[in-house]
Amino acid sequence: MEIMLDLWKKQFNRDKLLMRHEEPRIFFQSQWQKREGPSVFYLFYRWVVTLYLAGTWLLTVIDPKNLDKSQEFRIKWLIYLTNWGYSTCLLQSLICSVILSVWIIQRNKIKDNESQYSYWINRTYKSYWICNTIATDIAFGVTVLYWALIYDDRTMNLDAQNVFVHGTNSVVMFIELCVVKHPIYFVHFYWSIFFGFIYSIFSVVYFAAGGTSRSEDPYIYAVLDWRNGWKTTAICLAVLVFIILLHCFSSTISLLRLYIYKKIYERKLNTSNKTNNNELHGFDNTAMSDFTP
Image 1 (cartoon, helix red, strand yellow):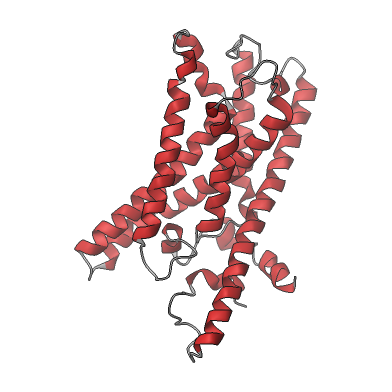
Image 2 (tube, rainbow, N blue to C red):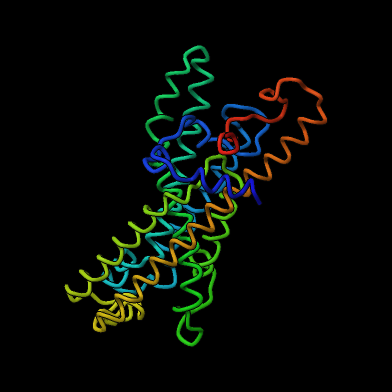
C-alpha cells in the first residue's frame, strides 16, 4: 500500500503535466518483452490489434445492414461519440504499429546510427501518448454509458457490429493497458476531459443548426437533448466527472502493471544472484523510474 501511495505522489510534476518523458522508446515497447529495443513479437501483436480495429471500424463505416439507406443517413456516422472514440482507438494503435515498424526496419539498416530511427520516436511519442490516453478513457466511458443509459433492446439490435464498438473497444484498450510499457498518469486526465468537452460543444452546435439523429430525433442521443438545456448541461458535467474517475481507474491499472512487473523483477533478481541491479537477463529497468526515489 505504501508503495502505491508513493507512486501516486509521483504522478504530479511539471514534466508529467507537459507529457515529457526521459525515455520515449518505451512507448513502442511492451512491458513484458524480454530484451530492450524493438520487439518483433510486440510488432506482431501491434499489427494484429491494428488490423482488428481497422476491420471493425471499416465495418461500422460501410454499415452493411443499412446499405439501402440514404446518403444523409449514412453521413451521420460522423455525429456519434461511439465512432469518435473508436476512431481514436484505431488511430493510436496505427501510430504505434507504424512507428515500431519504422524503428525495426531502420535499426536493421543503420545499426550504428541510433539517431536516425530515434528521430521518428521522439517526434511521435507524445501524439501516441495523447491518443492512447484519450482512447482508453473514452472506450471505457462509451461502454459503460451506452449499456447503462442508451441501449434499448426494444428498438436496438444486439448484433456483432454493436458489440464491436460498444464492448470489445473496452476489452482491447484494457488489454493494451496491461501490455504496453508506457505509463498512464492521473495528471493527464485533462486530455480526455478536453475530448469530452469538444464533443459536448459539437452536440450543442449540431442541435442549434437543426441537426437530427439517424432516427430523425432533434438530438444525437436522448441524454443530450438540448431542448432541456440545464438538465443536459448537468448531465454533461456529470459525464466529465465520470471520465475523470475512469481515468483514475486507467492510471491505477497502469501503476498496478508496473507494481507486478517490479515484484517479478525483484524475484528474478534475487534468484539470479547478480550484483548489478541494473542488468538482469530477461528484464530491464527503463520502465521502473516511477519506483525510484
